[in-house]
Image 1: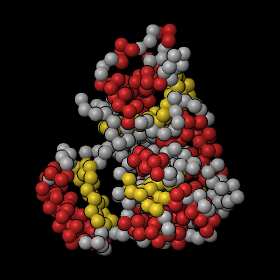
Image 2: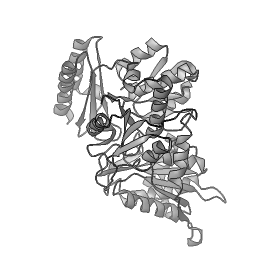
Image 3: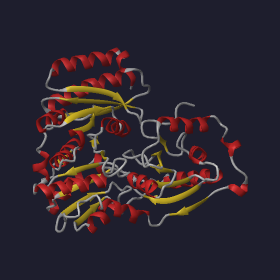
Length: 449
């Protein structure tokens, strides 16, 4: 058995190793064991998105925690950042999220937050992995008299909504603003319309009828076509597309144009700088961010740092370099002044606050940066050898880079959560970018697909 934890917890196809009931039970046991102390039972918050497999995994985690003497608090369906907030605010020892984020319904995942609201350290994940794979957990269980129990937290959504509303400036109002939300049939389907309605917005919501099988299905942050159409039809000021677990936001402007994570990052960073709140004048993104972001940062006087791909690396670099804002092109934003992790609803509130403060439409604010044409192709792979050792791919990359010169760039990397190779190309025109990206993707497919 190999390593369990990837860049964002444990992921896999539901009901198959490692995302089966037995593994969830063992994770529950390991977390309860790791955080118990003398005269202290581990207190663990458990939440999930809307996938049908969440019921099985939730029950198994709860059973594992109880068997090791821990106490579970079940918040049921709540966005990932909501679970992080509840964990931190109630001073629990850990929070467990059952979600595979933007992946299709048949996948699921388990990610764990420490009591601080931040994700576990690598060392803590390794300890949990060692406990599970070492096979000694059954020998560590306490006697029946010391087993744990669980409680349902009915007020968790309300607590999280209050937290979100408090991140929106009190002097501003959304009264009369038309907002369209695409909840991706996922974890934001209840709390997002409530938060915006309570702040005065005129809310219209689509893809908010989860069946357990339709999360992220041609909707949400990766498929914005329905949202774009509805925003234009309703004459809305903004459209908000969340992913299945609610930690990402992709926005749609009043004309139906898609606003990327990089553009959102630039809009929010500019407001922070104007208010004197952009600590160290620094913006953190990833190597996948659009070339236009780098140029816009220079233009507006921000320092810019590109981290490795993955929100945990963005956060690490933010903390290490003293930044308060960072994010990914995919729409994953971290506002350290407000929260410990990426939060799609919180990000949407900051974007709307920027629109109101600046008295500008979203399409106007998006003009703070020029977006270079970008093409991303995910190629399924059967193995993950070092890219530099795959000669056919290396040659294709070299050829494309030579043709692009300084008018674009190439990035080829493996997914940390799926058996896929991500090929990203930026270039001067849509057609050239598409052609070059397909050339490299074809080389990947022929070599290791």
